Picture (tube, rainbow, N blue to C red):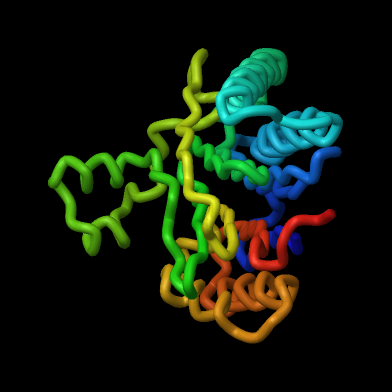
Length: 247
């Protein structure tokens, strides 16, 4: 399979608190990860890097992730370890108030496809030229939309649209949303909200359907975000499943 990932600081922020990677293990299984950190004194980038490095290192050294149940248990166990590590770092670094990170991941094997999510970074699949969001944002505004107190249109520009209800490092326990997805898809896209706050699903979809390499697609999406102001860090991981498995 073909894959590509990239992160960009954007046009407003002084430093990048996002982390992103794509890892292939010894059984040609793929793990895509995007984390969007938060916290004072550059603590956000520490939290996001800790999450991505922990998961990536553990996954790369595996011979196989095993069954779907094995994978779900592995993901939950490691996410809990990361959560505790972030909490411990915050205890020992007094300037790290508010330290935490979102996390979105996709685990791809020959038999199944799992998405995992905490926070408001997004996971999509591309099928027949259409982009479909698989994850649910853990935000105050999304809760209000689900409760019928806000419309989707009102939510787009709500002043509290980035207030998170769940994040790694926010509480002693942290539950990962796991989504079991049909493997018959053409591609996977993970991103931080630096992309989705700048571009609509339709605008992202349009770029993904152009005759471009994965690298060109990602670079074009980031460029479009920056042209529109680049108000946040932008991270994207993409996997082309039409190219088939490495044999």
